[in-house]
Image (tube, rainbow, N blue to C red):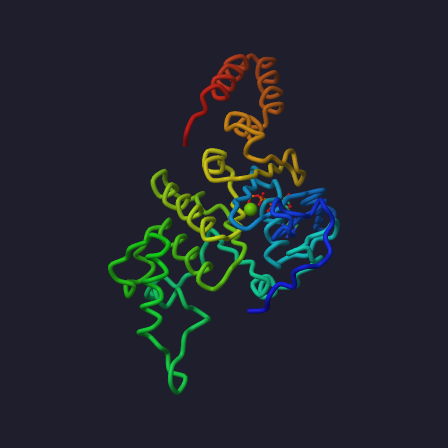
Length: 294
Ligand SMILES: Nc1ncnc2c1ncn2[C@@H]1O[C@H](COP(=O)(O)OP(=O)(O)OP(=O)(O)O)[C@@H](O)[C@H]1O
Ligand SMILES: [Mg+2]
């Protein structure tokens, strides 16, 4: 794995609390696809041992943002730096070599293959005469999963037999094992039930505690708030807020995500057509007071 070239001169604004450069720093980053401005003026930081959450509704620009960081797309405005060095990544391979791993919601796993084969897919361990070192790979898979707190009886079972949450966890453990410094999780809890989501949130914290800088993409503030250290809120490609945990509460985050002003506008419109506008405002106010936990 190529090492990140550290110790490049950095400005104060791109420095982490520790004094060194941020693992990843975005400053006023923008991206357009033809005439569509998918992202503009986005600023955020990712640091080792911290979780940066990116929140936003459909079409907010979340995937565009992580595709830039994961090397799938190039930004066309602002700066993107890794350890204080300006970068324009040209491929996911380059991102990986810089220590950035991405786990996508539709995990690229081979369902019928054993867990250990999926764990080492594309990076198999080989022993004498170039033969696959199956024993070692099974041992490492079991050990690495155990260290993430996943105790599987049999790493020989097909990965397809695991639940969605467990599969996400295997992918996280894999990224940790292969030396990722930053881990991007694109809506890992979106398709999961309450209990499974809790399991994935726990492994996000495990990855953080092992020193990774985690970027957690979600549209659910109730998932983001308990695990996040900082929160970037996107709407229609623009940042509508960037907060450290101490500077925002869960009800405030929820209200911002729900698009407070837009809901009020909708309430007025419904009122005009004889709908339940007042009732919507009441429900919203109640939700801000006592958020509904999903
Ligand atoms: N390859 C593309 N070509 C043209 N427009 C695109 C492309 N990818 C994204 N967009 C547009 O950019 C905007 C942001 O999209 P993006 O996929 O980043 O949003 P998102 O926050 O990930 O949404 P979702 O929650 O639905 O996944 C949208 O208006 C989308 O239609
Ligand atoms: Mg998306």
